[in-house]
Length: 413
Image (cartoon, rainbow, N blue to C red; front, side, top):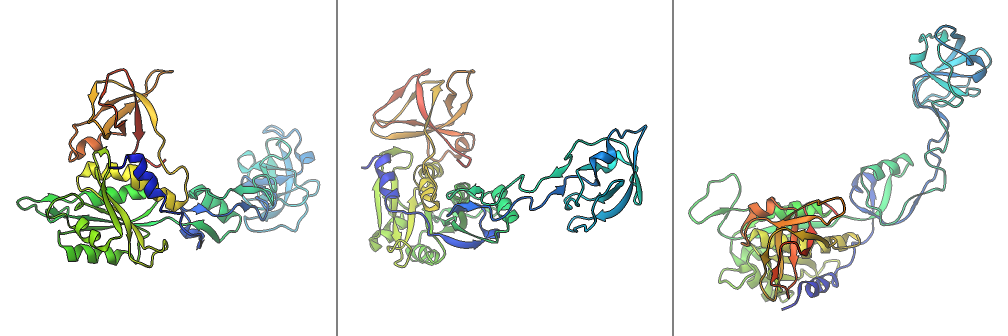
């Protein structure tokens, strides 16, 4: 059997980042920028007002106060989007709205609250500082300035910046489309009544959500009963829209583990045991012959027990999604914490034990404790944890107070 590290290296070695696409800005959210972006213009593109108020000359309002206001003629009314042709000369001002260009001759903006709000003649009741509430051209972005580097993940703020400099389309490494399928005749869709021997299907919901957290566009196909023709037809049908397929269930050595049986016949997916607990049975390969990898669409076949499935996703699939996105590093960082209770681990296997990590003292390591039992079906313990306690395959016992490796999960990173 391969170790966890050997298997992950094997998987990632067969994947490359998604090809660059030119997409509308509306479709770029969550994608990685393919090229550096430099500003094609200044922001703001001209001096403009930061307040609703009056554009004035400093000499006209020096010493203005509520007791001794400065009286000025209002010679223009400038709305946002309008450009004034009037020059502010001695004894005059212009009423101006937020975002409107500063008229020639104006040296400051007096907020409307510090005036009597006059429309033909106004009383200025406060002396502004020079340049007050004037947004200077290029004060945010100067033409030619480097704004975003290649590899930047485009969030809402980055999308806003690109729109502000007039970018309508952008070249990106797209988010991979991930299709999630669960198999098992015992599975029932949530909301329906359970029959004898049946359980509600949860893995596809969990794995699709995990794929979205990893930055993919996830599609939940749902469940397929243990029928070889139905399983194969469902998987092959999804190759037309998927950049990556995930199945859960049907990969052990049982008589009804149809995923392994069907895909083994095709000869394009390798099934093997990995030296880990939970999640020993794993499968990875390609299906279909016209995928972008030349050998088809990559597919992960994960074990059906919920915790095994989630561990497998975090350890193998999540790094693969990040590789497809072009993100580095592909793996979540392994950190250390102090164990609060004794624990044991099976020999010869890397153990991924659900845990809860909390900050410790000001200078100490975080503290971690196991959550729930060791069973790979115990989903409640997974939902109540925020990390895996990772015990190496050559360690069988760890004492309280010793340091352990932890792998935090549950949020993008």
